[in-house]
Length: 402
Ligand SMILES: *[C@@H]1O[C@H](CO)[C@@H](O)[C@H](O)[C@H]1NC(C)=O
Ligand SMILES: *[C@@H]1O[C@H](CO)[C@@H](O)[C@H](O)[C@H]1NC(C)=O
Ligand SMILES: *[C@@H]1O[C@H](CO)[C@@H](O)[C@H](O)[C@H]1NC(C)=O
Image (cartoon, rainbow, N blue to C red; front, side, top):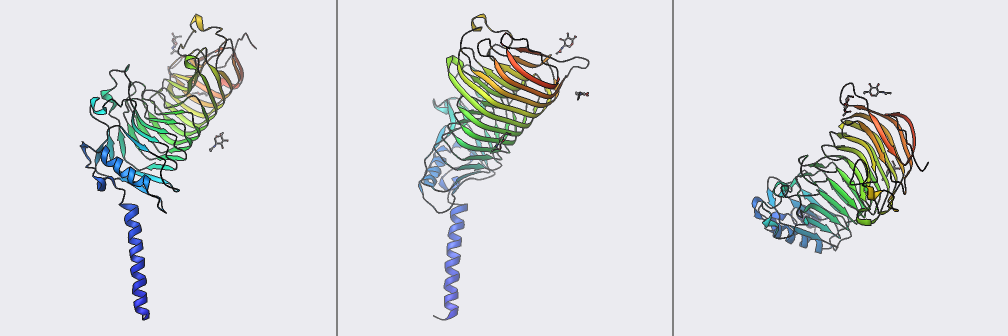
């Protein structure tokens, strides 16, 4: 062979391999290639499942991407993206187009717990500028019935979610259950402020969860951190409307629940019912400890700082709940740098139980003023061991225990 022939062969080999690589990465797992229609009416869940199964079953030497193309709307019935996948790499889902839930309750065919379930998938990366609409308004009027969570991630370790817009879930928008290592950023989660139980993100039995640079405005908690969780960081979250960022409720029905190392930094609450809240039921056990809320901006927030060990009662406890004997312990909780306004009289409400009380509650650099011109704010405190400095309203804690 002359040098020119060798050069030609070399070029063809290179061209072929680079083409093959591009085709695999950009096209192979496009849901449209697997039969998805994307007209917003046809049920595309079968095509999505086929795409997922093909992608999850291969063992490539690169990171495969499931592509949901733009300018289309895919109707999905309740479905499961299941792992584990035969992969040593990350696995990507790029959402450029829109995804919508069934128009009718009967469209769920009895699967009324979860709309889209992701289970046992490690290193899953979901990103894009697409929109996922749970069409919850068909479910909300009958708030007593079971309603599905829009996106549930179960046992997904090293999960990344970024960029998406989530709308109108029938119930929670995102649930994390049994996940270790989650990063959530640049999400926009929106539902009407009176839609029932439409929490933004609910975290249970999970550890190492980072939520940052996102906006959540829904009808319930922006973020709810419930039992079995630790090392949760939330920064630069804009919350509102909604019920605030909540630890709990914990210990309901006598449960043993634990939460530790929750750090909320540089966040803002806009016209939310609560701001930073810890709520536990009488008669439970476990703990909520090492929790901090720092640099918090408030705009017309109902109850900016709340610890309530008599949940679900807000004010005085039920008589049968006093001295119940066991309670979830609340300790080492710090509120530092709260600035802004409240619509209620009691800007700070610390209602701790007789049986375990709250220990080492620190309040520093707090200035919460009334949204009503001329009104002053005040605080309520029972059975809490409080260390406070530079705090408006001041906290005086008469206590049986200290
Ligand atoms: C979480 O927040 C704590 C307290 O601010 C900080 O020490 C820690 O480094 C943060 N972790 C991550 C992963 O950002
Ligand atoms: C504002 O002040 C008025 C007059 O003292 C009082 O009756 C009212 O309850 C206060 N409202 C709030 C939300 O603090
Ligand atoms: C508290 O905030 C109010 C309203 O922003 C402001 O007028 C007041 O000076 C602040 N007080 C302190 C001690 O910073």
